[in-house]
Length: 392
Image: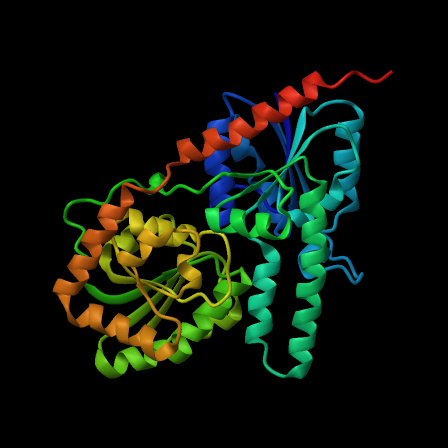
């Protein structure tokens, strides 16, 4: 089974939720599928240098520089242009070198020409839903108009992409339901994220430091917004109640705007070899997201490590109703700060929340289960392709 896999980044190193997801899946696909990876990269030099790390997982790897398109296309489509990638995909399909095409994100489907080869479109987020959230947060009439226009255009193109795909998949039941509500004729499968790559925490992981930990890929705009909101609006309120409280912003590629948040009580680490030691040492994990979709891998990881978590409603998307019982949820700065302060000041309450997180861990999907769901989609599409009459 030969799979042409289109991604907007190289899945190594796994320093963001999307990269981690694809890396963990590719590790498990390798024995079953001949994967030809095509990455349309916004971090071209870094991704090109890491290609060798995917040898053994992929039959071939091609990396192309993403070129911003000056057209009026939606933002996510516009920023993932690449004529070279389009030609590469077209040539592979012309030569009959793929039994199916896997596209990670509707905005990459533009690179796949009309073809009898079946297409699986996997949505890590319903992108137009993020656009609607940006409209709600926009400040000023001009920004609101701009955000609404991008939301409207994104929704139109995303729906068109879903309808064009042979089969669609979502990461969460929530997103699957959203897709079916707006396009009931779709066939949408579930390919979840896992969290078992971190392993279980050591027995002595007590989380004693009065620190609030936010783990994220800060190159992603929703995480940048969350970091600013947390440090400027929430943390000062926490420190009124807990003067010794500190915040740790841990993760990939913090831009200058995030680095500027660093001070005596805010530490910005940048990329770290492993987030596990930060999860285990810090008292509370926060997910102050105001924009988002799908499921948040860092929240999954924190649950798997049995952490006390404070999150917005956006941060717990896709986890199911059971997650509300083991995560404190607050959507305004005052309430979010009050939850953080309470957990820092009341060890018994924090331990109770940690215990509920550990119990919830047993309900989380594993990466093996996720990979099997994806392989089931591949097998079905490959069988459909084999059943088609040959042309010529």
